[in-house]
Image (tube, rainbow, N blue to C red):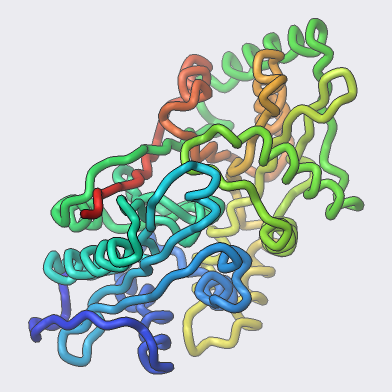
Length: 386
């Protein structure tokens, strides 16, 4: 969408209550005519932006900026540093995120430049993005297949890629998503192959699969966190979760988990991996369309009706899958994938989004060999700071 104003451009830090309100509400304005954008609950956006209460702000510091043309806000961005990212990745980087903008190259370049200046003044040698505000949250810029996003995946219109690249940013890393649907013509062949590989893993490697015990949700999520931190430790940009982030995960993601679809893997009785799919909550959010000025209780009632009564959620997402380093070659990954995919057959769900996966992850090659195809790509960008 083109900028609604041609007035001279100014960039300023968000400091007043009035500026913060405009920053908070801007996504609903810039995307109001986009049929694919899915609005978050107001409480979800508040949690991300609240520097006092947001779990990740324990180790992040940063500022918000807006681009104005006259009195009209035309773009927003966050400039920040994740000290844990730099610590665990031996990096010296700052980040940008929460980027939203009209199709206004001058405004976009000015916003990205102010984020660069923010990092450069603090002595960082490069800047990465986008992330809102960690890799545990929505992150990456969508560069293909601009249809409805699944839960906890970012969406942006196609022109964002040009805005970012024209501002001098280059690719740092791509992450990809796969898609599986019950009605695929190859579903039987695909399922049979998974079952054969899983059977061998169970017989030869001592692999067993058990469902998540929802009655022990806190303990199960702690086990998940321990496995996750081990499984992902060598991944690009990974930062282990803190206790507060685990609490936030239990409170947010935990309420969406379908225990019939979530699994842990064990090898000879020892915890080895996990798969944690969730219903595509975005389908309910799109129906409810929460927005500023509408009491959240009304949005939640619409969400609950669509999700629990109408049973309108048909898709799922597998955002979290991991195997401990020592069990990578035991067939655990295949056994977990087979368990998850088999679980949607008797259910109401018709599809599952598997993402994201780093383009450098061997899982990409393996998944392609099973017959699934990449259907979406998100990109992280970087730029050197002088």
